[in-house]
Length: 87
Length: 294
Image (cartoon, rainbow over all chains, first blue to last red):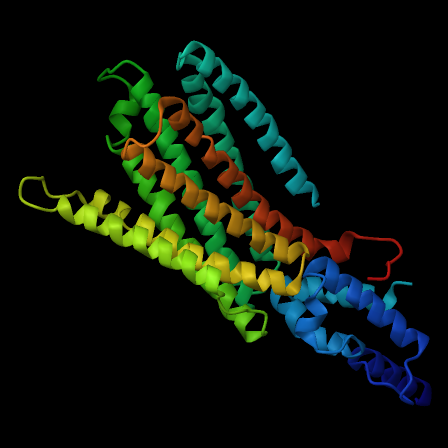
């Protein structure tokens, strides 16, 4: 149960982009880089500026509404999978 | 560049290459023989293929959104606009064929279809398609505004829009001259066709607003999709202006023939716009490989 709860917490942090000790982990960095790549590719290279004022604050939670509105729920689901799972 | 977009512009380039050869022949000989043949057969085929491609791509984009998603309605109207352009191209080509065959009471085309096929086609492919597109673009602008993507108009945009409005008022004043008693009352089709210019003006304002938003988000597949609509609308406006210039007798004979080529570019731009959107929607499911740093 503890393991599951830890996993849920970790995924929720990755989703919202919140940092544990104020420092981004390698996992946070990887997810943000993937997300920025997809934002740039699908919407535009300045799309992150529409989502938030600071690049460090770009997360799946902040970008999902914009991406869902213009790409649709199904495409966004696939995109989230790619952002979280691609190595 | 998405595969469909590459194909659309490849076909367009081949089509223009044939058109250039035919135009050169016209310039050298002064004969309309091959030019008429090109516009009647290859040109019609190009319009039909481009509008069918646009319709299917727009319909595919529509099906990527669920019924409660706001962009579904936008793509429904874009698909309807494409369908209207296809119907118009079919009706106009049928009218051309009917005109090219000898008049006979036994001719199937002469019996089945009404005489003003081309005018009905112009209404469907003109004002009706423009209304559908204007509804779709309004929807897109509303969504862009909701997400803070939309930008206001700049001074140059206002000057451009002012110029368009001035031209439209000029056109309205000219139309008013022909409403007097010496002239016969206008037909309903003619009255509907008068709406083309105001609708095109509205589409231009929407296109400029969308273009501003695209500049804000930078170059991506979605911004390229809306950028293509801007190009298509501006090209349509150029085509419309050329019709006006021809009507006013401002262009020489070789230039008149050259203006007919504008419409192929507009058709290709209209067809490639949904191809960009579809590529953005399908990309996360297709693309495999290592993600590069942005």
